[in-house]
Image (cartoon, rainbow, N blue to C red; front, top):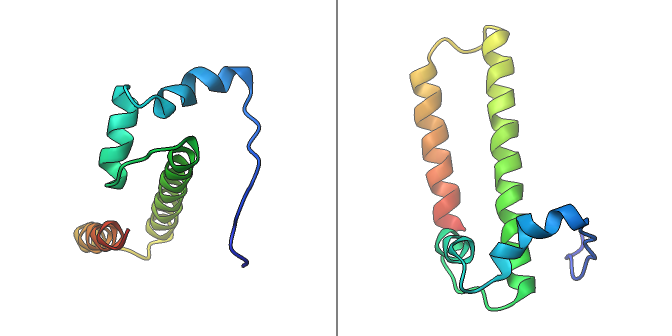
Length: 98
């Protein structure tokens, strides 16, 4: 896939109160976002990029959880503890590499 450069995001009016606090440098949401991503976010572009990437991570976690649940339902896993350890380890590795 080619490198993404610029993409237009059209927000609805209802999105403004949800997204705007993350773009305000004086808000708790902005401070939390910087803390989570581990860097200073000095532009709307950087803040929106961080939100998108965090959303991507959450979707991937949901996919992993869905795959696990399907495997359990199919009887493929008998040891939840092993899965929890593997999943926790994988999440730590992803966070460390981010």
